[in-house]
Length: 335
Ligand SMILES: [Zn+2]
Image (cartoon, rainbow, N blue to C red):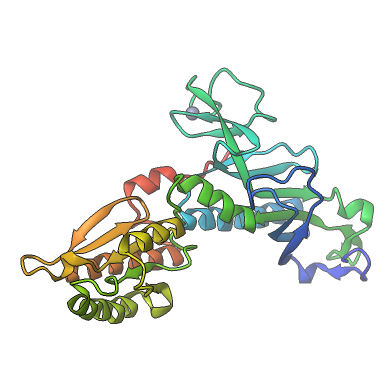
């Protein structure tokens, strides 16, 4: 497009154009559900700069944004220096989720976390970053890719801008992509077990699922009072759109809980027989990490509030409040 319009001025640069839309690919073998499908959603962006230096600045800014996004999702990822064979260019990075279903071979250092694509890193004896010899092969799912293209495409296509002296000069390009469909599929693949789905907090369709007593059970009348209190209070804390109320009372609690686990809600609150007993009434709270707690009413609300707070800090891009565990897992590795 920039090649066919009259040259733009250096004053209009840098220019960054992005789109989010469906892509179609004639895959010979579609695999793992949404992981490799013939249609998928992708975000892609092209950047245009006046020089290698400013293009590199753009590259750094976009990479920082990608790093932030992948930290926000809290799925452990590795960022590797990539082969630039097909797309050309000088600088390129891939973002991978490590999973046995991945189609790329990565070499990862067990002591510092450094990772390289085996296509590029020709089986070195020791880690290029920390010299450890403890390297292991892992499989990676590529979820994003960044390229600094230089003038590889702009030059042959005649995509130019007018420089400060009014002369046409080749645009310096970068291209950047995130496989949105694949991020979702791969994140679920990495986080979930065979029996339970687990979402990144920011992608979960709901924060909380509320399961009330079964129709006709002994505890139903009293438990429903608590259920209604929770509906109101939990909704106020996390937002009513984030609360899924499973009011299919004809189904047992066990059946509804099983389905809730398959849907992977971060928190599932059960108002069962224990909630109405006179001696220390408790709600059962199941987390998508597979933990079960017996909590009283206010402790339950506190847990919901903590979850909402954590989500809000992720949205703001603050990672200080994250646990040590997730911190160690969500490191990006600049090569
Ligand atoms: Zn190392």
